[in-house]
Image (cartoon, rainbow, N blue to C red; front, side, top):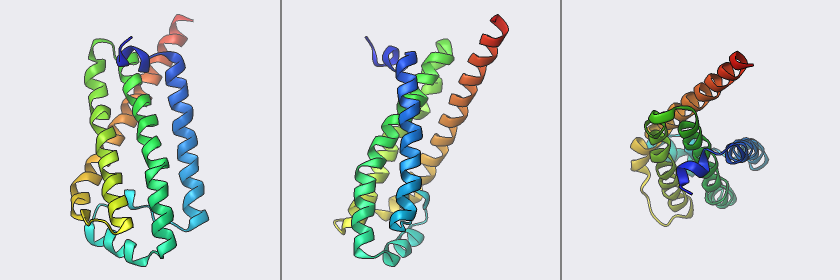
Length: 162
């Protein structure tokens, strides 16, 4: 069974949807509990460096762990949802609709590596976030729009056919 077939199965789509929702909630809990500034939302290298400077050593460690765990699972979950939805709902154009998400997952993971390296003081590749973060954000928005669009199309067709 191909990855395309697997990701577009109803069961897999539901699992990836639920995982995406749970991981989104986990981020919403982690941020206030540890008073984190999520570097994922910051593209400007100067702002990233200022955010890093404002964090305590404990926040650096916690943010690195959040990035290395939740922020690895998150692109896998939403990537499966976006890619599977593209294949499931857009027929022969599914590969084209899934393509932005196929690129998005490794882009998000690379951004995480850049952040963990900075948070742990191993390397400073923060300047790359000026390109990586906007690319990730744009691809993520495309994924959300095409996924919601696919589900709406499916729902409308299901209502019409009764």
